[in-house]
Length: 343
Ligand SMILES: Cc1cc2nc3c(=O)[nH]c(=O)nc-3n(C[C@H](O)[C@H](O)[C@H](O)COP(=O)(O)OP(=O)(O)OC[C@H]3O[C@@H](n4cnc5c(N)ncnc54)[C@H](O)[C@@H]3O)c2cc1C
Image (cartoon, rainbow, N blue to C red; front, side):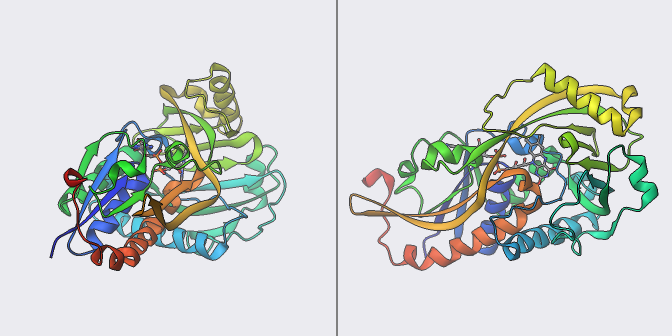
């Protein structure tokens, strides 16, 4: 039987994890990841990599919960293994606090993370302006290492990587039987989906190895995330802002606000700065679509729009996307095979 040819467009955390899930769960299929940019040049490389979902009111809770739970279980099993440092995975504990208690008093993920509890008075006192908060242990993927590990895992499953920009999904017609679209912000130009918008995030990476706990708050969008190689300081959340250049006023503001909550950061050594556009959609797009043009059909699975939670949801959405690929397989098997050269 001929192999089913699957193209996954995108080599960020969503594309690579989807490619791995497809290659490992569907027998007799060949998977090719096609991307304009690979690690270390994707948005995913810039992420602090923390598994802490941001509640999206438009997406049903049961779906967010399932994506987070599946992702947590997957990363947890790596954290418990001897591979953890190579893969770039670690446990991370810390505090998240608010000026006003959020509507969602008990977040849907509280029983998925470890040791979740509300902050007590003495903890709240530590952080100026904190009125309400919680503390928990979660997991973190050091983005570069984790993306490299995903690439290697895909190679092991006989997947392939190919550099290139896809200008039109129909370019792949005839070359592949199923196309999986994991293009993040690129989906806007590729599919004409105007529901996806950028939320600009600027960060500092600093050397401050004495920091072992994360601190994050909705007050001025401040966060401090210690990672394996560096500490990520943020941030900004600027909707519809496409600028990828460093804004010096943001740089200054980020350092100042982080020092309010962690004064020892005045002693940190700056390593680098970066900007990324969170590919945001009110409802993440995870669905199959049958495109039609001039009597021809093209089977597409979309998996994009993870916004601020791409790391927190990646494995759960990758598993679901692989399931959607399985669901469209019967259509491929009943279609006559033609190749691009015969078109
Ligand atoms: C500062 C910052 C901090 C963050 N921190 C966290 C965090 O701690 N936890 C968390 O869960 N999330 C975090 N995020 C969000 C997270 O980074 C994103 O949700 C995630 O990276 C999205 O992954 P992706 O694979 O969809 O997109 P990307 O990483 O942007 O990958 C998209 C891929 O598609 C390719 N592509 C696009 N268009 C085309 C095309 N036409 N042809 C070929 N290839 C194409 C690109 O080249 C790239 O390979 C953060 C984001 C930012 C900016």
